[in-house]
Length: 514
Image 1 (spheres, rainbow, N blue to C red):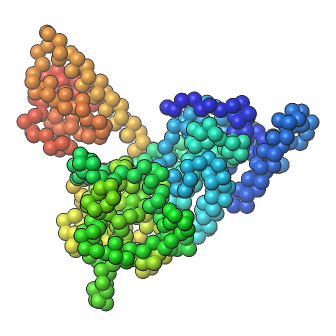
Image 2: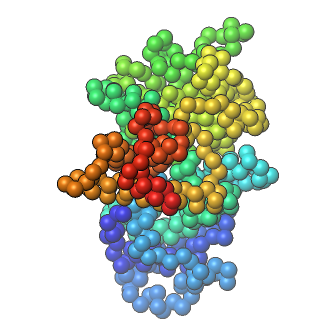
Image 3: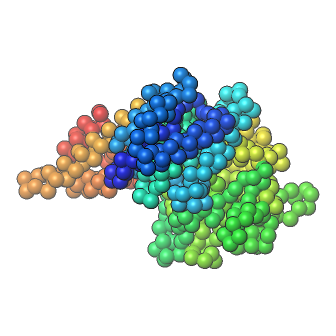
């Protein structure tokens, strides 16, 4: 938990929404005209607040100020703003921000940024109203954009003591849209709005054992690029008018992304070329096109760059480079010709995303207007990379088998199940079991060190091994293996290491009953 935000009484008063004059809570996502009207009202309220500090009794002399313009917008129903709420948002992480600036001022509080996101959602909700799985996925992607933008705004306002009165005044309306987005996401995915953070985290995938091993080896030689959040912004892809652009770091102008240039196509210069022989049409005697690695983060921001095994400044550049090895939504490779996407796949040894993960990327591209009719999608078949299936993006979205990951990967956790209430309860129970196991192991290690203990070497070695496991899922799976309840060990522990009897086995069996 972050330290208590250092907020003055005046700033807290503005954050509460008291000086906006109407409710900042929404029963559903506001229309773009409602958002613009609320922004105008907020700025008017801020002007009155500033005047009130010069003339303290101004607000009291105006009985109409602070009252709702209509009976339906009373502020009495607004969500309370307490210290716990403020600390919660100050400590949250909303992944890499899709804003170009980390400053609080005009960039982050520019209402047009959020207004554009709201307008995209309003438009999509009219077009994709059938509420089938695909339409919900597209709407969900746009809602995540709103959710992460408003969340990032609130977090930075709370953490930056240079916050302005304008920042604090806008806090209430950004907060209202944030909760509205959470409620809408909850409706789409059938989970309570306050559990959306858990849902979004469940869509993430982490590094595979291969990815961890490669990165650890490269980091040992200091030859691996891990970007910071600020550095990653230079690699973010912008989608405008259906085309993909990157922002020139010198001129700040949007430039069409193009992987057909020499630095993207030269043999051996780009590790993403491995297995990407089908991004061109041999029957038409086309030449192989260049490819770029890409990564999509929790807030659906898309990043892309030329991957390299060793000749990149600073070291090797992999799929793990964009987020410093953190969890992602999806990674893979893509081909772009003068801004137009032509090819996309889920080839990534570091993350091994399933077609389910790739679907989230395709949905996001479609939601932001990228044309898919001429885009080829290739799905990794780890057993036969050279003949991995290729199809059009539209066929990929229609094909239920492909969307639900028809290939069996030798990596756990690649497929993200729908987070239902039942799944949330199961996940909580597993967490309690893991905590009980850690307690049992710690108590056993302490007891086995006493002079009167009669602990076997196998039990002591097992306890020490279990005490080093960080991941809860791995821990419980290893315990079940050690107890003979599962044939699988996440660490490929030999079968002769299993516990046959003894105090440790009894403690672990009891912990699993949680």
